[in-house]
Figure 1 (cartoon, one colour):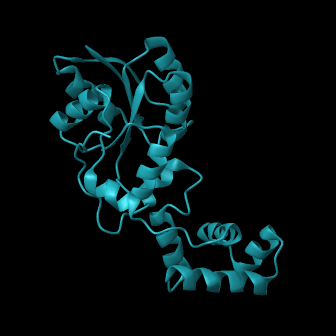
Figure 2: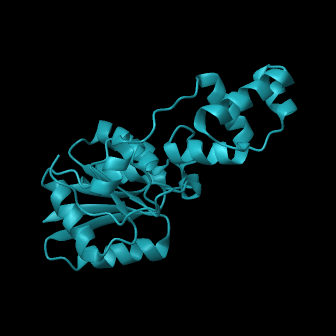
Figure 3: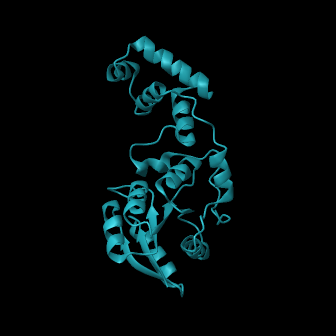
Length: 227
């Protein structure tokens, strides 16, 4: 029997996943939590084979919880749940130690199969999304340029960016011009969008991942080959 913990803050979604997985003959949901701070403590108590973790949990976000779970209970494999599949989110999930990456509207049968395959030692990722992540553009921006763009993404005007980063207004404008030229954007808003989609500019709050759009349209996830 495969034991599973579900970490999802939306009650309807969590309840649906509990019901769907509990209906499988070989899967048992041992606990369900709705807050990121509860993921690792619950796993340490119940010691599940697998944890399904929402990427945007309140408190400790899903990626941080997954990384901590890998350190403290490596026997428990983690699968990241998200409402929006993007190459940037996938790369972050893999860096955190996730063994799978699943969209929340995945059919019940595919979710159960994902659980089984990950517990069996496979990594379950949509092949198209994996290729997109591998082929994503390299970040052409310097650390300073990213700082300027991040401040611009927060809506700060040039003078505020200059004060915050101890630069002159002219220097900030030069940085913004170089940023637009480097990434082929026409406006600051477009530059922010491109940088977020590429994963170069990641939101401080992972719950904002829903604002990051995958330009080619997020493909439905399917199990990948063993890897």
